[in-house]
Length: 112
Image 1 (cartoon, rainbow, N blue to C red):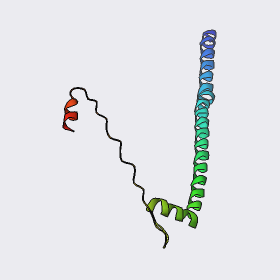
Image 2: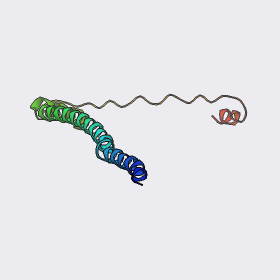
Image 3: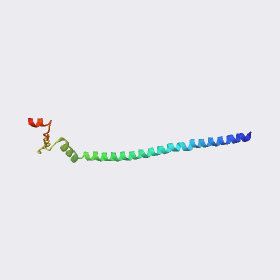
């Protein structure tokens, strides 16, 4: 009887030990690898956002200079200094539409 219990219990204990090892070591490893990949993606995103923030800070610093303020005021708002004249150029008129003289458009040619 002891041999039957040992023959049945020992493989059962080994299987339980292997399962416990999987639960403790292997399954958390997958989660850890996923978290590591996500952390690397977030680090890359953070670097990109930091670079963009630095560019925006440089743009803000540049836009606060008198030269840039004057350039924007002239370009966007048409402002000029006293004694200067501002001219607005109108766009060229659209080209006339060519209507083919074939039917049913020949009626339009007769009217014009």
